[in-house]
Amino acid sequence: MQIDVTGAKILFELPFGITITETQVNMWIVMAAIAAFCAWLTHGLKVRPESKRQIVAEFLVKTAENFVTGNMGKRWKWFTPYIAALFSLAMFSSLISLLGMYPPTSDLNTTVGWAIMTFILITFYKIKTNGVLGYAKGLTEPIFVMTPMNILGEIATPVSMAFRMFGNVASGTVVSALLYAALAALNNAVFGWLPGILGEMGEKLPILQLGIPAVLSLYFDVFSGVLQAFIFCMLTMLYIASAAEASD
Image (cartoon, rainbow, N blue to C red; front, side, top):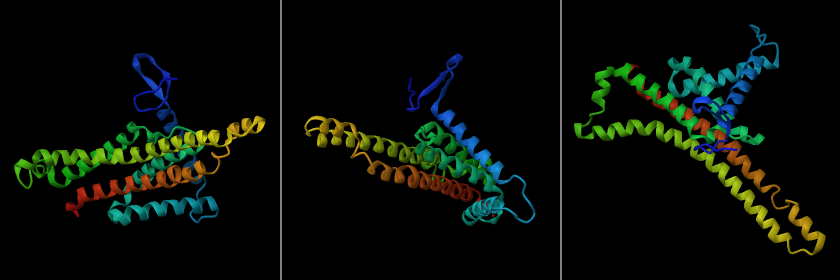
């Protein structure tokens, strides 16, 4: 199985050098699962909720709206679908590793794509608020000599957002794999000295690999994955609201 430069397996090779990787397939699986879940939750809605499914749907929508308006203001309530979709994709793209699947957030292409979308929105609202000339003038402040540094500062925003999520998710996967391998070696060292069939059984049974990797997985896969999705969305909201604050 071939591996591309991002570490994802290449599943299919199409003409003209086009490849289909684990990242793309797993991301489509996540999107399909989220879409199916949303369709199930919103099927047969009533003016007054009569089912637990509709109550859960309304609770999720209200929570997402409060999350957005609490950080960006009530006039940004319409921005809720984008943030909710981004948070869902980021969270479940990390949690998919619990099923033994390659998490799309471990691929830098994924997080860079999200960061670029955020950067485009930030730039759009800066230009909408200040105009093209005002935006260009802002890059020269406080003095013209600072222009290169200001440009680097603009570019640093999506770069830092992309590498923050990618680094945390990818490092968790690497640490878990290294720990699992280390425990396997320790298991062989501890039980390998036993004589005869006891030693053979001790080496084959992953006694020391039970428990510890599962506990760490709760942090790296669950807590860290949800936390990084939250941070990414929080930064997205704060940057965009800050870019448009002059128009309030």
